[in-house]
Image (tube, rainbow, N blue to C red; front, top):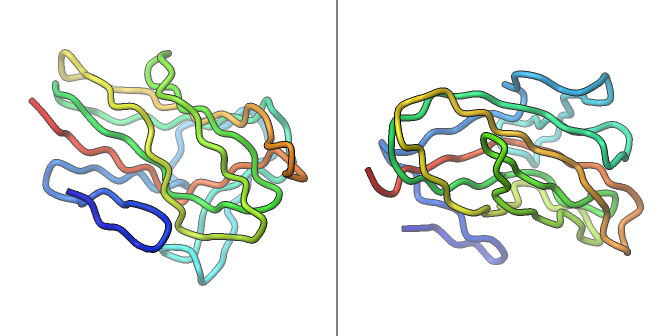
Length: 152
């Protein structure tokens, strides 16, 4: 099930859902990340790159039981946003272009589903990899990551 607004389809949360807040990261690759604040964002904050660079990345770790999962990122789209790749335990879950001409908070981008074959700690890496030709930068902003188990 999902919930739809005028632009984005949000996953319906349940007891099989896990939310990782953007600021609850495990590792960032350098000091070009900051917690930004805006009343338009869920909980009034998000994690973002402060400079555009196709080499910016942030990792998150979480324990998951065996099963198949959908994953998506809620973040901020805008004129200085780039393309984000999402990598789960070294495997690409796809990419999302966060560029739009005016700022949009709480934008949702779904990525490919993935399977965990045995209970374990999973590493999720969000990478700024490029920019849309119309974008002024390659920055990415993460409010939270939502993981939803769809099958056991």
